[in-house]
Image (cartoon, rainbow, N blue to C red; front, side, top):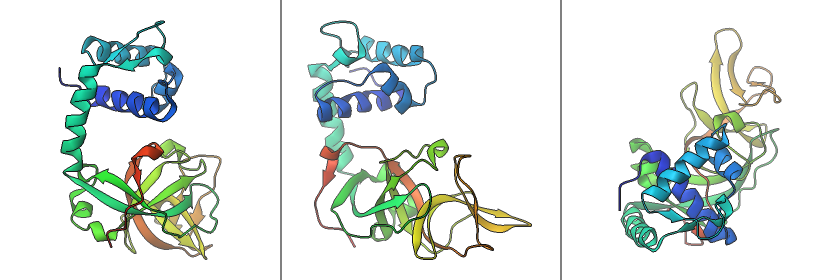
Length: 230
């Protein structure tokens, strides 16, 4: 099999996971949304490159819904997944955290999520006992690429550098925002959506629960009910 670029790999994995979960491939618009494309032509181009390299076929009509993985790509994928899971971690899932107006987070253990350690910064991968996963709810962080339903991999810590995305507790309620520091206003939590307001520590005290170190947009078939590693 010809090697895929990072962009082609991302598209291929989305087509595969969507097909596994729903029984059919995503539409061009769904692929555009996932890849961050503004034009349908960009999705058509990446599909054409995957077809040319022998990873997908269109057995019926020439539409995105009729895309299917080739037998060779399935064999290749199995090898890649085996190698990937050799370098993987099980991170406990602890419910959800709002990407919107702070509300009480659900802090119950609900299984685990398997991720590749290659997704993580080295310092986070070296301390897997500090990692936990929360599912984002809401739309306040959409311009940071965090969509409703995404799983956030969080490193438990009480502080973080300005400009990083954190999970914070504001008077008993939890939320995910970008941590910022202003010379005049001081520390505050910034949403990545102009429809939401900043939360300033001088007006409402908050504490850092952890720093977001990775994001996993996955289907339920890749979740595990294994015990947490901490």
